[in-house]
Image (tube, rainbow, N blue to C red):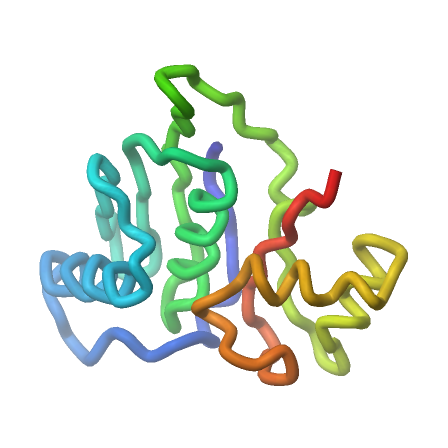
Length: 155
């Protein structure tokens, strides 16, 4: 949990120009609902022009990571304040404080297999990264520089 920083100039265009914070907030909610990622009890707040706060409870760590990555991949968002608590069967699950291991920002020359080689030591594990980033990713060959990807724990 905490504040995660991302590249604000890349991602999916969700916002127009000169929208109120309420309009920006609704557009983020609509975007998350489009992918079926917003669970009941999760609150989305657009704190200023470039920061989104996510709070409430979710039912899995993977769902939490997908939610954060999807918000991070909205053009113009540079930080996500993660205040999500993961509750599985009424038991609070601690969230690791190692965001660099949970997310990966795509660099020039990256491919999912190259990323898998870097994070797992095995390029053939790229399907795990692809699956963890659906429905944001529709094709394993279509990633872009600056995109934030969820890196699933394979342990």
